[in-house]
Image (cartoon, rainbow, N blue to C red; front, side, top):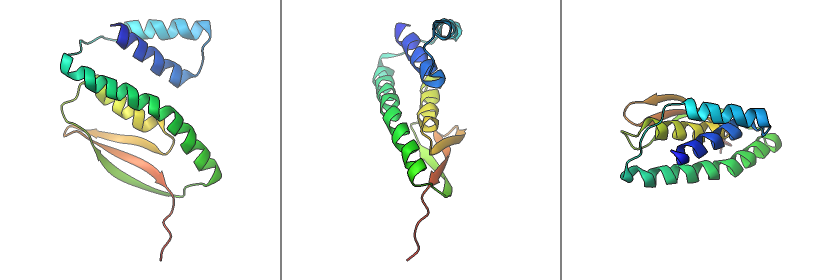
Length: 128
């Protein structure tokens, strides 16, 4: 329960970027009101991997933002990203959050087979 609360608050602060007292109270209320689910022992490793991915996505988002400012990307493509099927809704949310958190990508659709349709902005390839 404490882990879920901390994860939800972390995501709340990443989304709002506001550490005022009112925002902290709102974040705690939302984190407590959202439905809670138990985590099986097998999925603890998966949850820890996802938390690590979220933490790695923060500097990656800054790097991509600076890259987009300095060298604008003018091409785009839609790719399919495969992930493990039959994941819990919380892990699916974190997958989508990590993909969408970075400026160059956004999830368009989640398929039941465990894949995501991802729109990404890319640099135009030079023709030879």
